[in-house]
Each structure stands twice: as structure tokens, then as C-alpha cells.
Image 1 (cartoon, rainbow, N blue to C red):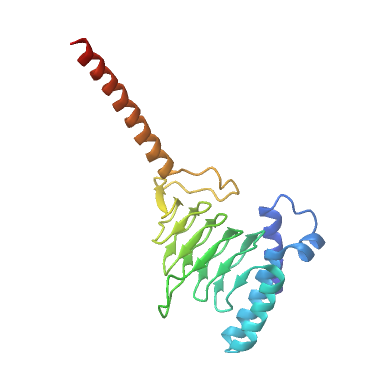
Image 2 (image 1 turned 90 degrees about the horizontal axis):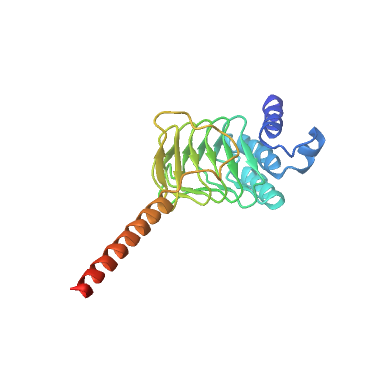
Length: 216
């Protein structure tokens, strides 16, 4: 457990350029506190101390603004940046080296039983305000862009943006796991731009036609 806690601290220094010292990270990083609280709550949950696990979870939520159900399975080197408003459901499974940002929801879509929350594979990144809903899979090395709503599986080495989320395939090239999650493709914007260009072209053709009609 102490080795895991040490890894949780080390990944903060790797991912957050604002981190300056161990004492600062240990005392002031709410994402780290939420992860540690969850690891303790999850240990009780596995031993069927459900009420105690839930109490610990709610105490962590009160102090951090991050709600992680004690039943969620979280791997090593998990990093929550800022974290306010993050919600992680009971049947979520999160792999190693996963990063998520504030306002992210890993939730369900209704009152279905069994596996009803997402599975996030290793090295994935879920950007600010994204919603990943239902029993779906986000593949290894994939990114979910800020504000996206993902309702379908995301293949490995892919990027998803928009509402609903649209997959941008990177031809098998690994999507780099970095913090530059604002520089992502926007298929909705691209389509709107294409439509505007077609409208402008039709307007030009219409003016030419009207000009020829008057001359006749």
C-alpha cells in the first residue's frame, strides 16, 4: 500500500508542472486525497464492509469535491488534475497511468444492473468536463476531448471529440499522453466549415445566373 501511495505522489510531479515539493503535494492536492481515500474505502468494500466503505467515500467527497464509489476498481498511477466535480461510478474499471481532469463523469445511463459504468484502459486521458457513460470501453492510449459525451466504445490509440463523441482514428499511431488536450480535432467544426464553403459557392453561382438572366 505504501508503495502505491508513493507512486500516486510521483505521478503528480510527472503530470503537474505546478507541483513544487512533496509536502505541498501531500497536504494540498485534492485529487491525491480523493485517490487515497478511495483506496482505503475500496479495501473495506472488497471485505464486504459496505457501510464503512461508503462512509469513508462520502467523507472524501465532502473534503475534495470528488466522488468515487468505493466499488470502483482503480489501477496504479492514477492522476486527477484539480478534480472538482469528478464522479466515478461503482462498476468503473480504470487501468494504469490514466489521467482525468475536473468535471469528468464516468457514469451510467440508467437503472440497469450489473456492469453499468465505463472501463478505461491503460494510458487513457479524459479531458475537462467529458462524460463517458454506460458499460463501454475506452481503449489504451486514447483521449476523450474536453466537453465530449461518449456513449460508444473507443478503440485503442484513438481520439474522441464532440457531442455525441466522434472517433478520430490515428492510423494506428499511438496518441501521446500529454496535457495538451485542447489541441484536438473537431469534426463538427470541420463539417460546418465545409457546409459554409458550399453555401458561399452556391451564392456565387446564383449571382452569376441572375446576372446572365438580366443581360438577356
